[in-house]
Image 1 (cartoon, one colour):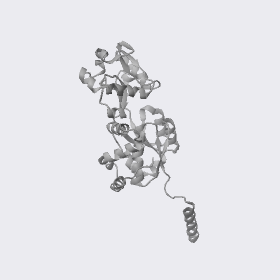
Image 2 (tube, rainbow, N blue to C red):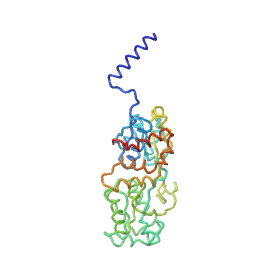
Image 3 (cartoon, one colour):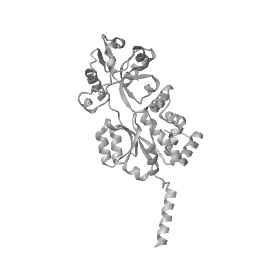
Image 4 (cartoon, rainbow, N blue to C red):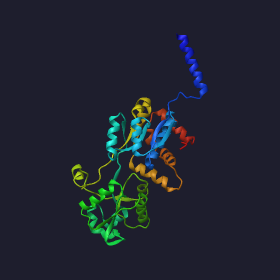
Length: 324
């Protein structure tokens, strides 16, 4: 019997050898959604997993909804940014089905109302309650009798919230301007900043634009759930931005799981690598990932076992890059 098993094993090994089939693990599939911050994180972890742990990775372009379905089904192994409160129902379903939350990617994301820091200093503006008396500073070019507040775009829940917050804060001296796209919203901020002009509106972090521009986040009433539920009469709540993996990933890649549990950045770091990408036309998400690995070595080394960290550093020194 033993001889038969040995013979069978030999035959199988020969078949594998000549058929080109690899006995290595299948590539780790990473959800590659539309935002640059997600795609940079995807490439940071892919570089470390590829050159530090020796596992292949591939990126699957997907939406938030399809990405969640992929994690549930096991078609996707890893998602580096799940904005929990923005997709609470899907998040709860994923965890109930065995998807694992490995913790925060960055815990200090925020959204709120901004003015340029130079404007805030010039007029001693600190909070939303300073804005009514300074409405002339932010005069609406289409209605000079009021100031202009730049809100989110049509379809964003934040756009609805912003209107309600304008009302509840009593900012009657402002028209709410709804731009047609995110590019128009960010472009209005950049245009004003380049001309050293005032600007008042909504934005969030991390984003490339807040890595390049010095903007002041206006103080609001601190977030309280009761105030939020009764008319959004307070600051936006913070949002958890967490790393999720499929149920099978925990069992199949325990070494990578331990690394991902330690992986954590900040919105300031995200702002910086996103700004780096925008500084020169043609820079890619991979370029930003490489910039991060080169400039935040002390941080990523702290996530890794010594042997893995050494292999990653050696790969960087050799100039090795991801293909995508």
